Length: 102
Image (cartoon, rainbow, N blue to C red; front, side):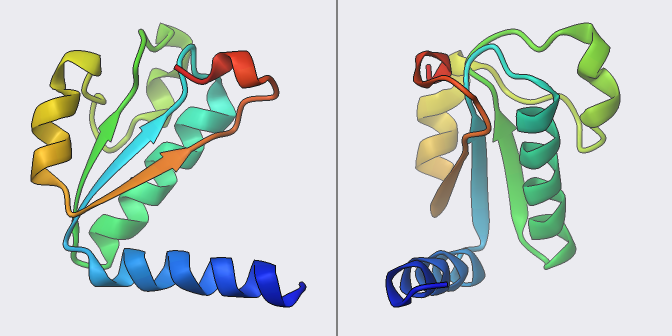
């Protein structure tokens, strides 16, 4: 790991540690990797005593419902309210193509 990568990682960890309300967002047309990563980060935040909400900018295919153990994610119409509520926002990008970013 080079110094730049370590510095970025340390900054992400610092910001996540300092927040109390985390909004985790993933890309449009999410796949299992994106939904699993989003759910894992929200679950880890809750385990650390933080409040966490999840948001997906498009419909979640029913075949991935088992990945959403933390409850159904909010939709794009709730972004403004959740963004005001959160003191940190994490974007989980697990897409292979840039066109998947909503």
